[in-house]
Image (cartoon, rainbow, N blue to C red; front, side, top):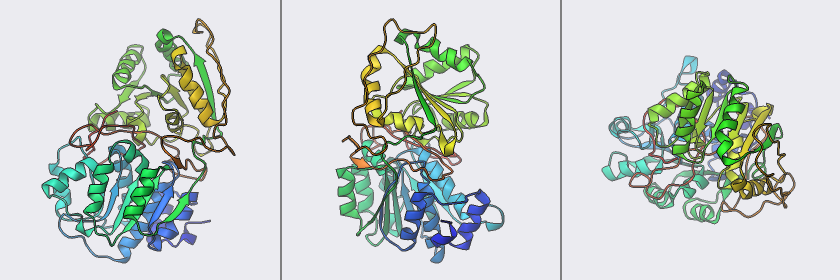
Length: 457
């Protein structure tokens, strides 16, 4: 199937050709015609399946088909995302698909709204009205309270990564925002899973939505090689240094469970002569953007991230992910390693596991439906072997997914996508800007604009 067959306009097709998009992914094939036809849509799709294009491309066509302008402080399209990184990526994707450069230069007016930075630049961007507003819920509520945004002109609403927003405690904020929108609108909901809360939200705020589900939940790329290096907890740093020094030029994403732990690891790596940086919710938006840009350009070869902060990362051709510490929630393992082994490329998912993490390892094996081979590293063997357990009815290919806190949903597609698999990113700060306690967040982006949802992670 081609993009031409989906009913997109010549302007969209030209922009896609310039970007090098050849074939639509499964979620794009299913969603684009439904959005163009004006249906509300519930789409089960992970980050990395090409879901941003699945809603951005047809919405741009719908905007241009009715070439009116938004009123002061208004937006025609509102996209809600859980994290500032994802907001930046979605915003950049709209600009690219609109053809805001070169021969297809568009008059698209768009902006991002999120916490962690000053409000005044956002107020200025909102003042004249927008075609597309990409926002995180907490900061958008702030603008609503200060009457610097008017949601009465929204024609199209996208809830992106709805499950992440609910996990992060944004349900009250989302309901408040939805209550301020016109009822006569098109609503698109994208979520990796469809828990009861999401179904209830859809039933309350959507009109006879079409449903699309892509791929098997918690599937992992076949090209990723998983391995566990058992090690005593007090030797983990030494083992990490050993692994990274084997090829100091290789780009490696290292996961730490805490912000403090991430910073401490970076100090150790830098003292050892490695080019390393950290990314987490305590970093300023400028520092996070610089760390990611340095990593993508190769100026930094080791990026240490928390699960929450990594939700917004979009890194192509990443050869290795190292779990310095296993995640507390098994599903986070799938999100972490989704950054390697993309688009058919080989990838390595390496986990440094101590005795106190054995239960987490067993949960991960059960989830992915396979036992991960343990490979002790000479000189770093633990005092005693790790307990082994075979997975019990995990949800590998053909297996029924176990119940989880996320409910039933979908995961990665093997179809082509510019933004491969993805994972966790920034959660939100507790407090006024978040509207609820922080939780685990997400995947990704090419940071350009100012503004960011205040985040924890």
